[in-house]
Amino acid sequence: MAIDDTVTVEDVMASPVETISADASVSDAAHAMREHDINSLLVPGSEMGIVTSTDVMDTVAAGHSPTDTTVSEVMTAPVESVTADLEMDEVAAMMTTYGISHLPVRDQHGDYVGMVSSTDIHELMADTTVGQ
Image (cartoon, rainbow, N blue to C red; front, side, top):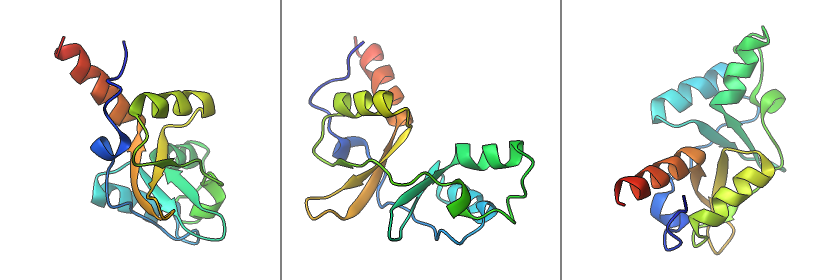
């Protein structure tokens, strides 16, 4: 099942991108994700990172305190990113290649403007299937 190659990241990305400090607790990250109804946050700094709901669950599952564990301890850095004009089938290939579920989106100036996720791809595939 293919993704319509006319659909771009800009068509499906969540925007604006939400961020959190590397010094914040994993608990703070979980609260921010719940508040914004999202599954990932960018972590700005000298090296851009990302923290996801999976990182939060892994922290708890490993028996670590989410209030005593910082985002910097569990985030992934550096992060891959995409541009808003990239086609979603290429995003799916990148996620598969790198084994990731979220990609920050940059504009033509290099600024982070959104986030695209594997959930967006699943929804596109479901829409394609229903439309056939």
